[in-house]
Image 1 (spheres, rainbow, N blue to C red):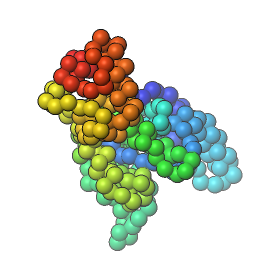
Image 2 (cartoon, one colour):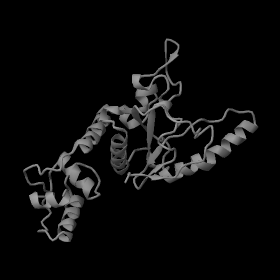
Image 3 (cartoon, rainbow, N blue to C red):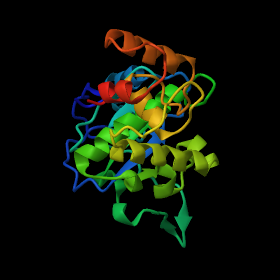
Image 4 (cartoon, helix red, strand yellow):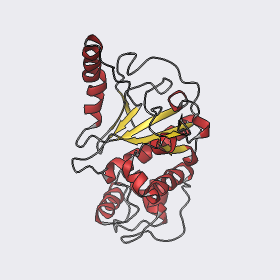
Length: 257
């Protein structure tokens, strides 16, 4: 089962033209740059509000807005608003020019990224940050997309990489955050369920902790803290295992059987 739900918006030439993609070469990640906006709020915007605004703009002789994305992710849910085999308007603006030509930085997506990619928008908190929960959920969504379309973490690109628009801004400001994001998606794609051979307990860090957290639906921090310990203890209790909060071989095998 995918890690998102479908709430598809009606066909509209400015938002969902209904045109099939030419292929899916990359996953383009964005941030909404809309403080406090939820995934459901953006679905409403693209299904009702923007179409109404565009209708009014055309009636008044103004230019309509071409904009959309396939998926929106917030701390609680992910919503797909454009079918994954259709075009969305998300990464083909003329933001930067080089020698008089619009910049296009990802060769596989030339000349128009909208025809060759799926887009994922991370929602922004009221303080203009992307929450850890949104980033974690986005990792899982993108992992599922990679599996679906036979892509790897190397096929994850920022909007910035395509047109030089500073989006998603935190991943542009600090490239290490973006590289860590891709690394964790890659680990989830290639993870092995074999017990690593040592106890994993409170205070542990690393990718094996992420595996446990994903399985127990705990935030993917990579750090075994109090919340992870509680989730492990509850799992052990429910499975009739020794409830000590330590993930040893028996608990690991039960988690990943």
